[in-house]
Length: 253
Image (spheres, rainbow, N blue to C red):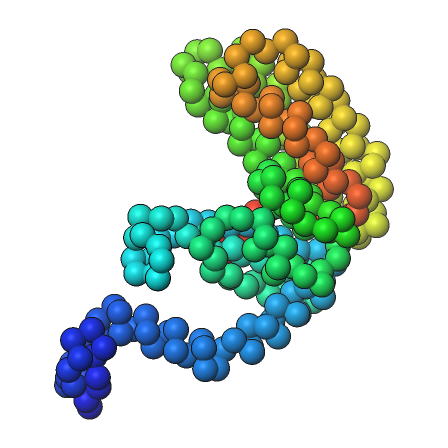
C-alpha cells in the first residue's frame, strides 16, 4: 500500500508507521469533512439539558498560524450531569481562556452550570445561566494549606476547622446517595442538614478572613476563596439534582 506524506512530499510504502503531522492532517480533514455537523448536533443535545458541567485545561499546539509554539491553548470540556438520560461529553478547542468562548458554546443554554471558581463563568455568561461552585475546590484549598505545614503543626492549625466543615458536607452527601434519596428528598435533606453547616462554615471563614493578616499565605488564599466564592458555592442548595463538586468535568479532561 502506498500513501502520500505531506511532511516530505513523497509517495511512500506503508510500513506501519505514519509521521505525526500526517496523522494530524488526517484528523483535521476528517473533522472538517464529516464531523463538524455531528459535533453541532451533539452540542445542541448538550445545551438542551438543564444542568451541565464545564471546565478547561491547557495544551500546546506546535504549529498554528499566528501563534508561537510556547503559547498556551485550551480545550474546554462540557458535559451533561448525573441526571441526564443521554450522557454527552464534548471538547472544544480554543486558542485562549477568554470567557467569550464559553459564552459562544453555551448560546441557547439556560440552567445550572457546574464550574470551578474561574471568574469568566460568573461575569461573562448571560443571567439565565446560574454558575454552581465546586466544594471539592474549596476543600482542596485547606488540604493544600495543611500540606505546607510541618506534620506536628497541622492538627492545631485553623485550616483543620475549614477542612472539617467541608468533609462533613461530603459525608452527608455520601449518606444521601447511600439512602438513594430522590432529587426532591435530597433537596429537603440538604435544606435541613447541609445548608446550616455551610452557613456556619462561611460565618467562620468570614471571621477568620477579617482576622487573617497574611492574605497571600496558603491559608489566607483559602479564606479569600471561601469569602469570594460563597455566592456560587451556595447555589448547590437551589436544586436537588445539583452536585457538590465539578468532578464530572475534571475526570473528563
